[in-house]
Length: 475
Image (cartoon, rainbow, N blue to C red; front, side, top):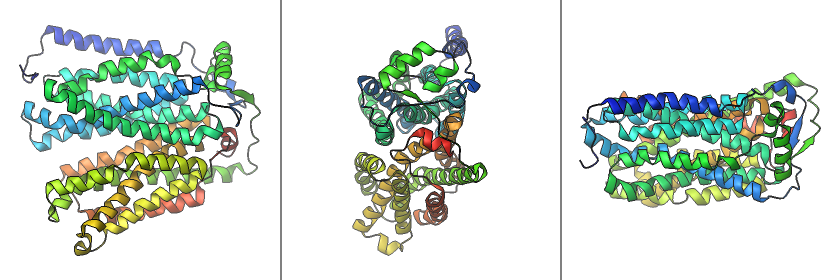
């Protein structure tokens, strides 16, 4: 049948399979939840952290490998959207406006998932939240067998929910188990490598499998990759505070041995708690504005850029070539960001990436005849691409380091969800026919991006090499 399922009737076996998924997913989630809900009162006043001079061990290496692979698998799912849309549109015979609903519901799902899994991570634990999102990730791969487009929309929303939760929880867990000396570069490098690797894996899978097996194979690959991640979950540890709160003393002792984590006296709370809280609220506002601004640049301005370049008279080949050439700097940018973040300054690196993006936005405001000069246009686009790649690589690690354990998952989830919200708003604008030019988008974004740099400069803290318990004492 050429891998076409459109129009096939939903027979009894199909309904039975769907029902089994509806029963199996809640059962698997129930089985993954801890038998004893953490008693957060048990961990009050207790701090667990590896000393600064703790070397990286094989246990650290195993965690980094599994979580990086998890982020690659996680990022593949939303990254696959662009590759499945043409085949899906052709098989179902959809108009462009109808098929555009798919990325909209997927991005909405990722936004919801970032808040949801971050909240669950603060209640039940980091490892549990990763397992729950992976279980949902495996189940939603069934959207590759949906005979109708409406079912694809439902499953794609759930897929987005599962994919949106992995990233903030991974940052949160790594921040709590890595020695302070290595924490900064590990957070940036693992997160950035996972994101770039996910997009490369999605494009590679599309190149290998779609010509032979059709677009549905790109959805179905979520099943074996998700099972692989579940099989490797034995190497994903739980945060030590949650082990303490569940009374899992043997597991806590084993983790302390493998990761060099010791019980340490908590830092004294600041004398002026009210001032510290107000300062932290300002930082949260700054990071949310930064995440929102990034999302509008990434999902809006850069998404519309090919069309805008063609309107300026560039051919489609040249337009895509300019963007592709600029995108080649993504991975080197992440490597440089990781180096500066860990060796120079976390706060200044974050501000620097914001300023690079601002420089790109300022360049987009140049007169059209001036910007038509190819070398200048490439430089402006490169600034935008380098700035946005560097910004997202350091933003969530910085958020994970700045919040106390009791709210770290929710706070990082809030920042992660804000970084997706722009995609939802952009899709709504596209449905309404509101697609601004590159200059128009730059005008709208330059003020909030400038504000974010100012607020981070005022309220941001230097986290490089500092103990989490020291940072938590002022959180």
